[in-house]
Amino acid sequence: MQTDPFTGGETFLEGFRLPGGEAWDAILDRHGQRLRALDQVGAAAGECAVGTDQDHSLVVAQGDEVGLLEAAEPRWAAFGEAIRAFRRTLPLVRLEDFGFDSESDDPFEANTARLHRIGGGVEALAFADERRSVYKFFLFREGGDVGATFHLEPAEDGGLHATAVPGSYRRLLEKLRLTHLVGMPTELAGITPEGVLVAKQTYGQPLPPQADVSGLDPDRFIPIPSRFLRADRDHPRLAFVDGEPWLLADTHDRNVVRDERGALRVIDLVASPLDAALLARAPLFRDWVARARLDPRAEVLAPVHDDEL
Image 1: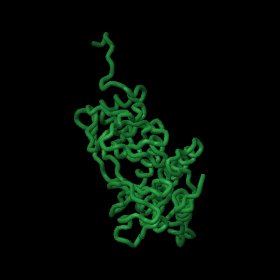
Image 2: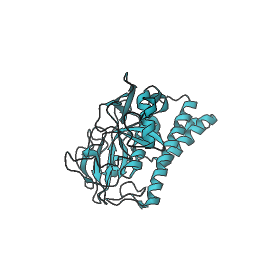
Image 3: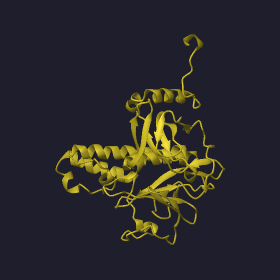
């Protein structure tokens, strides 16, 4: 464990170096704590009749957000404690901590003295410091949307239609945990009062344009037959996370790098869980997912015994 040079907080990541097993587990545990703490904030907000349709206001709430009301009723005291518990898992940081000007119309327009731009897209902008540690700044949209996920609808042919849509902070936190699990080690440095989520990643060597990424572990990133899915993002794959199926996509050459050992690792993706209720409405896809859980190379159609023909 080290001290992050920008926030002063604890960090397990620096440059190209992959964290050891204990550090990797510690980062994963923090991801889990953060998600549970956000759920508790949402539940406490509901008890106080605070709207939670968009979770932007919850993830940036400060420790004394409801201080004046905490003495009035136990439910408000519980809400205040839930906010403070969440803040311990996702501290507030400032753009100025990283050398950017929060008052600027475009804080990320230029490099800073300590960070230089290395990439980015619609969801986030990526910068690296002199140690080659990567910092990603996830931009929120007006209304509180952040990141991207999939809207899933059953299709008449027994498969699914997947359309990328703006996501929530919770779904983004889930995605970053998933990225740490199946791709490049990823931790969170904090969130700004405006709502810019700052993630930190191990640096990986970019691939040449149009590089072949079929080398991604096919037992972990299972290609989804086009028979079962129509998606508006490239390279849709099935992955099992904590035993549950997820749809992953955008695992193209720009979102895949080589780590210090030469292995391919995903650094970003679009993801959505495939819950049981949804799969029940797409029976052909559901059956293939069940078979792929046991055999990642399962065929499109289930095998039929000769005596059934």
